[in-house]
Image (cartoon, rainbow, N blue to C red; front, side, top):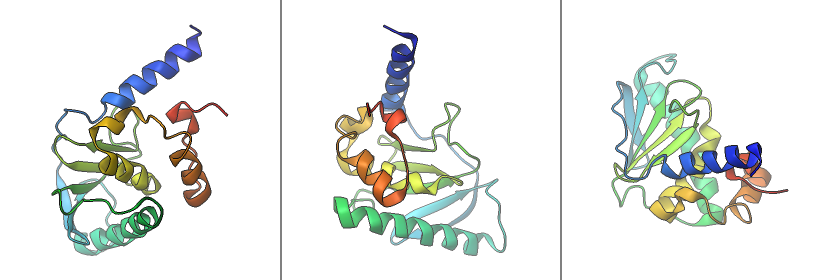
Length: 163
């Protein structure tokens, strides 16, 4: 195996385990509101211009647009029905490994970094597909092209896609 293959394999292993069976970490909450009927929490440290409630509503509006775009193509996501919580996390990443989003199936929590809201549809796909989706199997042929075309997000390297 080449060193790039080993790195790619390690990345996939880490990504596959990112949210499976692991409880979402506790966060200090600066604001809360709803994303439709789903609880949305804003982590302390996310810049607040105005009241925490208005900042939360601004994030809810953006995430609603991403969710609606996702649903148009991929169908409904049972966030409300399955008691999920969405959290906007402070910083460029939501964990020490540098992920911009993580779906914690065990805790029913979706974390998205404040500066990477465009990755929310990726996490919605994980919610929709369930725990077995943590390995991203099949995403290179269908989800990655959609992300590029519709969202302008290129995750092919992260997903291990060959061009």
